[in-house]
Image (cartoon, rainbow, N blue to C red; front, side, top):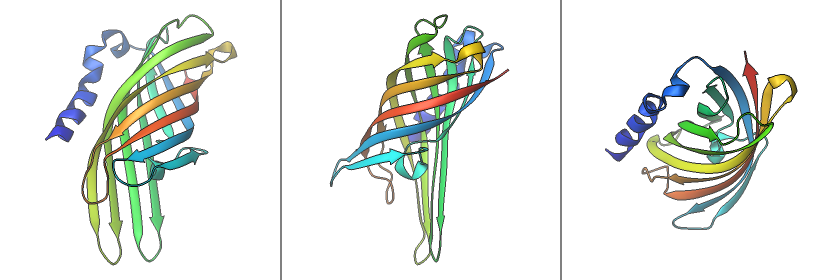
Amino acid sequence: MRLRTLLSLVLLLPIFIPSTARAGHVSLGANLGFARYNPDFGDGTTIIGWPSSELTYMPGIRVGLSDEAYRNEIYFDTGFTLLDSNASASVLELTGNYQLAFTPAKEVSPYVTAGGGIITAHTSGGFSESSTGGVIGGGLGFRDRLANGHGALRFEGRFDHLFRADPLLEKANLVQLRLGFDLYLQ
């Protein structure tokens, strides 16, 4: 039931941000990252994604919508990985996020971001199992707008909490440093 509530809140987020709901700018971007994955039980793992991969709980493709001033942005981080051989495994993540830039008129602007979504994992082969769990988190970063307003570079520190979903997804915390870029599709 908690996952359903979390997903509902993420999907309803645009209603509570009136300036973002109006016409604005669409962006398409990618994330590169370094993360530390810390499960409740067992050893942590260091992850480097170039580009980020859903297999490591770091979405790689970002689609956003911002207001005219680039102050408020709603974006979706997405990721999908499929491994296939005699057996297969797949992981899909979709998160909805809100980003607030503090000084959007300046070339470099600090921002804060928060959001949540779902992760689903599936395996098949000798056995078949599926799990769907939630993820929620936030971060702080800097956005550097490119010349002529065609895009931006991002550097962000982020913390995400992964909720346990038996049998494939374990409860864990993910501390990340992300480098990303966005192209503004005007």
